[in-house]
Image: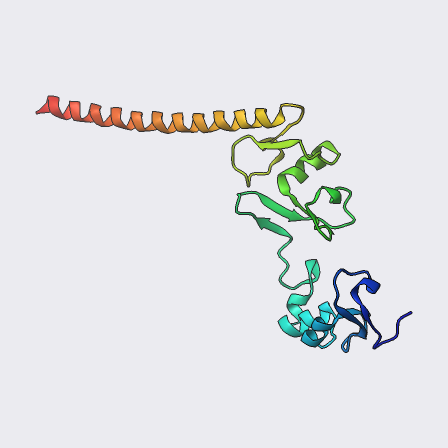
Length: 192
């Protein structure tokens, strides 16, 4: 067991590089760990949580539902989809996105709703399609599960058909407006 103040090279600690590591205890909470020399100078030996509290204040150091700024774990992404935070005790937790340090617990809401509906986790190749094309409308009636060999092609074909239908609806609407205007002009011309 190392003692406080022991210094050894990175490879002895299980790290890569030639840096010198020192075994220290956090001055605030007392947690003991190996710290790289440059980090030790920068943070004065404090652990990451204590450094976060010191730099950002206690409110931002608490994560998840215990934070006073917690908004339920729902986020609207730039792509238009809703991402939700899942807790580790949830049976569908492993559906979440993967990061270097493990699973983050975030999953797209429409995929989670479909997985709960069918009672099993979705496979990566299975696609959940929004029937009305609105990505934030995650009602189960609006969701359709596409799976099998041609799921991607089927999904793209459905999306292209929806876009073409929408373009034709707009064109019909514009043509109807023009017809109405032409009929109004003809009626006015006949009266004069």
